Each structure stands twice: as structure tokens, then as C-alpha cells.
Image 1 (cartoon, each protein chain N blue to C red):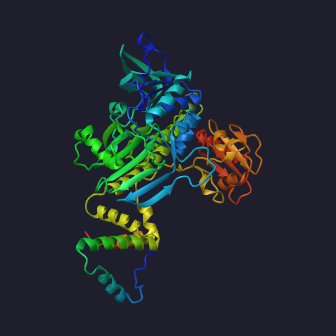
Image 2 (image 1 turned 180 degrees about the horizontal axis):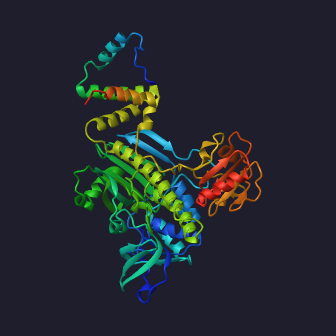
Length: 64
Length: 515
């Protein structure tokens, strides 16, 4: 598996708080728009098709 | 000036008075694909009869964007230079969101090709030129107002029932090539499934005549201010004719939308004035469909009868001409007895691959242009929003990925040390050669290109040794000092080696002909 599925982020609690703070004051629609842009930005930055496919599969697991 | 539609003459076919001898090839449909097919077969010495239920060229501009590859094919058929001279050459496309440009592309950033990336030319001109060439060709028997009404086939031949103004008759043919368009009556007569997808969207398409100084570029808008929430395309054609495509939504009523009193106000908003004349209007939906197999015994399908794609990728007419390219030499070889009919399976698999690639690309573009409500629209809108602030997102903006020939799988042998651009399965890249062009020296027969080495006579191929210019080195040698390329009659690279191995070349030639 090329996708890192163990903790890989220093200050992960800090990032989580920043993610929520970024959404603060946005309507549900605006939050959805922000999330969509964020996915596209990060996907381009990761730049590895296999990692992205694995990430999509992991996210989809047990949802719907 | 609007196009002057001249009817082509009808003459009473000989088959009405007495049975005709069996023909080698009968082609149904005198559109660009059927006519190109007849000329291509004639290039290989094969006579054909071309049947068409009508007697004029296409009404309306229809297919307008002819790709570099199509121009190379048309050139081999004798009408390429004429098409380029009349057409509007363009290579830059600009994509806008609302009133800001978000993305542009240059389809031919490098020099050294005889043909430009794209030429815009109304389908009726291409048909006119092809009809002229066919009429001047002694091997082609063009029959207008000859409508195919029924077909039968056995292992030996196809029998075609034909209706004319003077009555009905029938023809027998070794092969019938169905180039009878998207609604192919022959496909219906055989009862073949035309599987695929219909997109619930309608577009208005219009040709207008106006004096304007728009540059020769393709312009595409997402959610333009002049047509809120929808998509629009503006493209320049010869004779001061402009093509405009406007997205209408699925609920639009096609008959109402086609009325000039409804079309004209929409176009006034696009061009900003009312000094234009409406030349042609149509409303269409997007569909992507294909036949499972393009070869059905003695009946072979080519062009829209075999596969249809949604527009905005210029993959319909161009895809059809590539069918002609892949079929002509093989069908001629079967009719000459050089190859077994199994070689037609290579046409089917190669062009099936091409059709799948065209359908994939146009279905993706359609999804981006006309997203379904919900998550599809969310991502589409956010790509557009992001494109305005981050360069990487511009690549996702999809207003159609324009036709480039596919690379046929299963070709070879290959050597990875040689440049990717000329790998087996690709069209041999053009380059200047002497006072002319490499592409003009290729095709019509099997050829061996020897770069930086000598190849003695090889049975069944003409050997040429092109001069090593910088562009030829870039496109055929890379870092290698020598290479041998085997080129098919359709100018596609069949195999290549960075050394001379006559036995391997001979084997690859036999494989090409399925001998």
C-alpha cells in the first residue's frame, strides 16, 4: 500500500483545529465548496495516482 | 456569401436495365467518410460504386474542425492543400469563466509539420472537394439519388436493393462499406445494437454570417455573462461564417428554439449587435454509442454509422477519416487476395480502440460542461473557481479534449531507447525533408526508413534513407545513432529497431499483412 495510513503529521491536533477554523462562519454550501477546492489542491500536491486511488477507496469504505 | 448548394447529376444506373457484374466494393453514403473511402480504395487500385440517397452536399456546417491527421489523410486523397487554403487555420483555444479567461492551449507548439493542428472548414466544402476528386477518378462510380432499401448477405457477397427515381435494382458486392451516418439505415436493416449513453442536455448550433475581426481562435465560455449558467462556443469559419453553440438545458423545446425569433436574440447577446445573418440552425443532444463490432461479415461500418461521440472534441469526422485510413489498405489486400479476411479483424480492433478513446474523452468533457446537479456541479464549479487563482487547476477545465490520433495497441517490436513520439502504433511524425515533407514520402505501400544506417533490399517494402536533420533526429533517433522503422501503408509506425535485422523486418512485414 503506497498510501500512508499511520500518523504522518506533526501537530495533527493543531491541523484539525485549523481545518475547523477555516470553515468557521461558512454556510453548509460554502463549506462544501471549500472542501471540494481543498481536495483538488491536495490531490494535485500529492501527485501520485495510486495514492489518490487508495485514498478514495479508504474514504468510500463503509460509507453508503 | 452563403454557400451555393448545387445538385449533383443523377444518371440512370445500368443495373436498372440489365444485371451488373459483381462489384468489389460498394459504399453506402457520399458524406466525407464514404467519399474518402472511395478515393482511398482507388489509391490502391480498387474500383467502387458509391450510393447516396441525396444529391447535394451536407446542409449546414456540421463537422467543421479538421485535425492535422485528417488533413494528412485528405492530402493523400488529393484535397488536403485545397482544404487548408480555403479553411481557417487555428491552433489556440481560449476558455473563459464568466468574463475572465481561465485557460488557453496551443495545439501545435512545435514547428516542422506540413499540416497545421486544425483547420475550420464547413463539411459542405470538404464534401464538394471530395466529390470533385471522385468524379475525376475513373475507378469511382458515384450514384446520387440511389437509396439503399434492403441488404442481404451470405458468406460470398452482399446483395444491395436500391431505389432510384427510375425504379429499383440490385447490386452484388464482395464488400459493402456502410458510411451512412449516425442514423445508419444499414445498421437498422441488420438489426445491430448501438450501445452507449445519451446525455440529457440540448445544444443550439447556429452558423451566422457577419463581418467581424475575431481572431482565428476557438473560444469557449462556462457560465458567460451573455448566457448565464450555461456554456457557449464561438468558432470562425471561412466566408465570414461563424459557428455558435449554446447550451440550452434538457427542458428546452427543440422546435421552439430553432425559430429565428428565438435564436436571433440569443445570438445578439453573444456577438453584442444585430448585424449578422442567420445561415443555419439546429438543436442536438449528446450521445456516445458504438457497435460491438465494425465488421459484420460482408458489411463493414466506418464513421458515424459505427460510432458516435458528443461534439466539442472534433472526434466525429476526424475519427471517421481515421477509420478510412485503417481500413483502406487492408480491404484492398483482401480484395487482391494478398491477405486473408482475418486482417479486417485488425481494422475492427484498432478502430474499436480509437472509438473507445474518443468516447471516453468526449464523455468526460460532456460531464464537465453539463454536470448533473449535486456533487458533479459542485466539483465543476470549484475547479472553475480554483482555476482563477491556481495554475494547476486550469488543466482540469475541460471544454473538449481535441482529436489526436490514438496509438494503436499491439504494434511492435519496439525499443524503449527510441523517442516516444514515433513509437509503434503512432502515425509517423512529419518533419521537413529536402524541399518537401517526410509525410509526403510515406504511405500507399509498406516502407522501411533507415536512419543513420543502410538497409539492403527487403522483399515487400521500399527502403528510403532520409537525411538526418535535427528534427528527424529528435523525432526518430533520440540518443540512438541508428534506427530502422517499418511504416504501414497508412503512415503508421508498425515496428522499429535500433539496429538492422533483415529477418526481423521480413517477419514484421508478413505479420502486417497477416500472411
